[in-house]
Length: 89
Image (cartoon, rainbow, N blue to C red; front, side):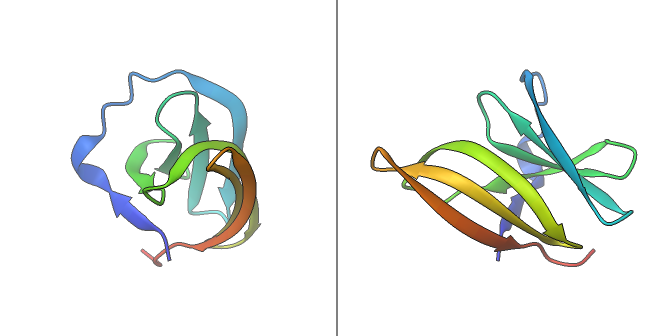
């Protein structure tokens, strides 16, 4: 399960060309510097998705179902595919 961190929603980061909707309620946007940003359906930021402590970067992410997505992370200079379940709002 993903950990959400709404306490530091400084969204001054540059967005990658990558993002996806999770059903019709939420979206995830990939940023260059800060990882994955959870937004509402109108793309208003809600929380950062906290990556594992050993994750160095997010290579790509894709929505699988409502509140479920996959992300390829770089860990110890190796790619690792992960599946994430977000808490239902």
